[in-house]
Image (cartoon, rainbow, N blue to C red; front, side, top):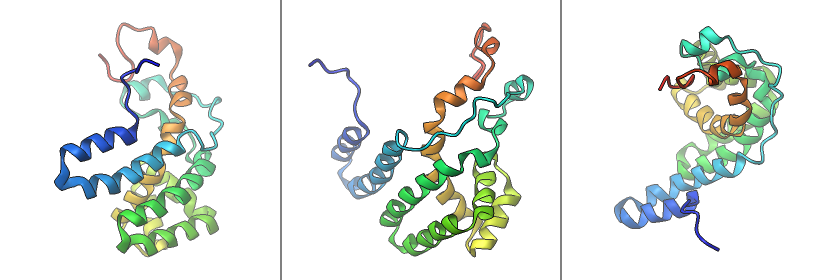
Length: 181
């Protein structure tokens, strides 16, 4: 069968590691996370965001499509991703493994905390991030890194549904509604 020329994430990481041997350990470690995130994109439960309305002016003014979605819609996907991504992140950073495990337990047990975390990562709500970090007894910077690692496959899984939210009229203009080109 002819090659499509498209590399899998794993083969691209292996090629990179061969070309940059001194960085092999770093590439291998982060490759674990990238591969886990890629696997999850097709396995996560999808939020029902079909009824979301996008404000054209806000969107064209630079607001991301996710800003129009209630962050709580991502709870099932986010929880599923976090509980699979954070253990891998703990392998990459062994000193953080216990803290990440604690975050996983808190995520499982405290819905209000989970909602704060999603407000922070989906909508960039700094107050929600500070409050969630304080409740977990960790720094906001550490929490944000953990949240972003778990949220990345969620937003990727919803990419097609999010893109469909942009009004059709925007796609018919002489320029791209996302980047303006």
